[in-house]
Amino acid sequence: MPGLGRLHPDRHEARHRAADWNQIVATILIIGSVAWDEVVHLSNPLRAGSHNAGRWGGCRIGGGAANTALALVGSGDRALVLSAVGDDKEGVRLVTELASHGVEIGLIDRHAGQTTRSLVMLDNRGERTVVNLARTAVCLPQTLVDVPADCCYVRSADPALTPVLAAWVRDRTVVAHVPPVHDGFRPAQVLLGSVSDLDASFLDDPFAAARRVAGTPLRWVVVTDGARGATAFGDGAVLTVAAPTVEVVDSTGAGDVFAAGLTHVLAAGGAMQKALETAVAWGTASVTYAGTVPPGLLAESLS
Image 1 (tube, helix red, strand yellow):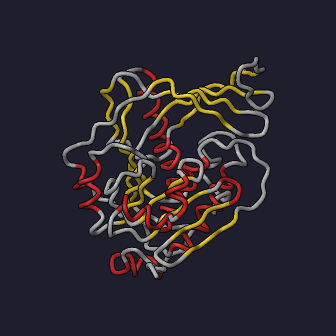
Image 2 (spheres, helix red, strand yellow):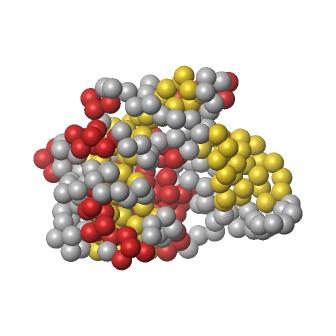
């Protein structure tokens, strides 16, 4: 059986004993994209090869790292984002907005060309279709391995992260998103992916497939399945949490908020069962409001 308890018990024991799970404060580094989402509301589900009626919905904060960080700061964690924006007015506005919500922006490079932008088409069922319009490359600082954090969540496919994660995984919790699923690509205790993004060969034996990606440090691989909930696969253990039925308003960023809930508990040394329950609760709550900034920065909705 894999660790049904904490990933680093000695380091987090005192915090875990005293923890109120809605008031945990941990330092979490999030590596990934920050962006502006340009939203179009569709009157009906998107129909390929046809005319679709819609209306402009404005711009809002997006990107996997930003969405995860906003959920974490709303829950009381310290969220450091490693990302990049352009040297344009959109980049200045984006980092200013993130900072105003409590996200720490010191590791966001502001010298790239054009700020990341995505077109989000949101239909009347709350389902979204995303088209990437511009993508800003993230340059990893040479001092990255020395960034102090209890936990790192990686939402980046940069192969240069592999040796950094190999160093981090020795004494801190690493949660990494897949794919990519190349052998040895993402040293981590926990891998996280979606049924829709993983092929049949991976899903046939998720733990064995994830072990090839993460190596011997792997304890769990968590697979989300939309409205059905999520399952964590360990070495001889399977944990499943079903998602409650809710009215979907906007599914944008739900996976990122799920990752925030999972990381929130694991960063404090919590067990996977609690982490999975929290992640499903947060991800489910996130589809009930519009946009990627939780109302009241989570308030009671994700408690």
